[in-house]
Image 1 (cartoon, helix red, strand yellow):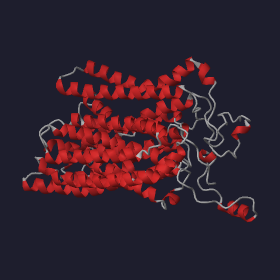
Image 2 (cartoon, one colour):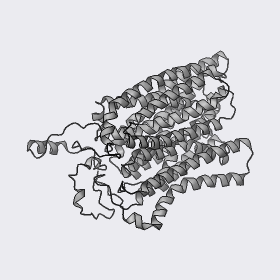
Image 3 (cartoon, rainbow, N blue to C red):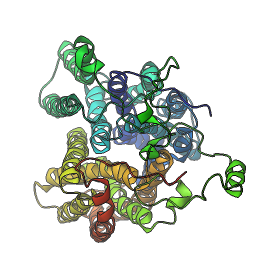
Amino acid sequence: MAKLKLKAGSRPPWVGLAAAVWVQISAGNGSNFPLYSSALKSVLGFNQQQLTFLGVANDIGESVGLLPGVACNRFPPWAVLLVGVFACFLGYGVIWLAVTQTVHDLPYWVLWIALVVGSNSNAWFGTAVLVTNMRNFPLSRGTVSGILKGYSGISAAVYTVLYSLLLEQSASKLLLFLTLGIPVICLAMMYFIRPCTPPSGEDSSIHVHFVFTQVASVLLAVYLITITVIYDSVSLSDAVSYVLLAIVFIFLLSPLGIPVKMTLTRANADTLTPLAGSTENLAEGEGGTTHSDPLLSASSSASNLGSFFENEYNSDVETLLAVGEGAVKKKRRPRRGEDFKLHEAFFKADFWLLWLVYFLGVGSGVTVTNNLAQIGIAFGVDNTTILLSLFSFCNFVGRLGSGALSEHFVRTRSIPRTLWMACTLVVMVLAFVLYALAFSGTLYVSTALLGVCFGVQYSLMVPTASELFGLKHFGIIYNFMLIGNPVGALLFSGLLAGSVYDAEAAKQGSSTCLGPECFQLTFFVLAGLCSLGSILSLFLTIRIRPVYQMLYSSGSFRLPHTSGH
């Protein structure tokens, strides 16, 4: 594809980050499955295993993003987002037609495919904004990942509030919003998600801006969980409900205050310098003019972050001719910390170790998210919206907090982020044991612990993959890692949890299982899997510690030499 011109200036990256917040909330639409799963079960007459396999379809669509990963290196972000818009409209539209009985007797396989297509919009939305913003802020990968994944994690609480206050807890209205509302939001944000000239890592205001965004997201999370509890406790009038929703809207707009502030105080913004070698044609503005600074020459050793937006597949013929003529040296294989293509990463043990750790951690966690409504009912909780909001809030805390915490320790002590993944896997073992033992009052404690740990696993995989295997082909590598999510959902949720639940329900002579035994065996198995994951994560941490000492030896991210591809 033609090389993309970068939007010059200090404000566009922050405008893109503010727009990305809305897209990331939209990209969390797969978290709504627990809100309308009961309607699917009752209206369409499904048993728990059929419903669980629909949850697997939701996870497959949400996490299988190899096509978006390839597309983000070949097409501009708006084109990637547009595919997600069509997928969201078509997939959830079919589910809405089935739940409202507008179209009768749709085959199960049609609904399964429709849910895959609808939730696959998450992959297109999330890949477009995550890859673009990490390239726009290459020196703050952990922080940016934590912020964006945090908003994605809290999206379930946003949808729960919307479902309760505006949509009258109607599954059909929620599905209609997913069909029409989400595409409209993403179409409105599409223009602002674009590659920009990265701001200088030396500008002190960058840290302040990130802190502001993090604080705003924390306040939003606290506010969401508060009004969810209030709604469950007291009856609210329509006017009060609309005011509460308006405040949510204001919180979501708050990151836009950064570029507004920069507009009002242009002095600092005009003195920012671009990050040398951070991307191809970095000094090129939107109008096509280039700054002739010799320090930004293409031969800079920091150019490993260059050529983000050029075609992934360069001409092999030209390379071979140049090698034969002695014009260039033969390419060497990349080392950890440099830019890998996906097939090159396949031959690295660290790649598969990271995948296994993610698979065991997130695969176990997604089993609970897919069955959270049924878990609540089995434990005697009638209204599971608070349970879902609690998980969403703690998921958000894990995603946002792990990004900031790991960024601090990786810069001050060069500690790999995988150490924190190992720690949270140990906590997940405790959470699953508490679930299985079903002590009085431990349901909410277990859900909170699992939510935090699930968020940490999800968030830390992102910067770790980019640090070990580079940003140039990060989109497809990141999305390959995400395959661990649906594989885990299929094995642990679809086959294990669904089978155990239906077997226990059959013993009770009902389609609904009540009591801790409904998921007890599942929880013990998941605890064992997380124990294995913690061991693998510690082993990975030991292996990659030298890489982090090389990358962060100066206290900030140091761009390694390019491998020549």
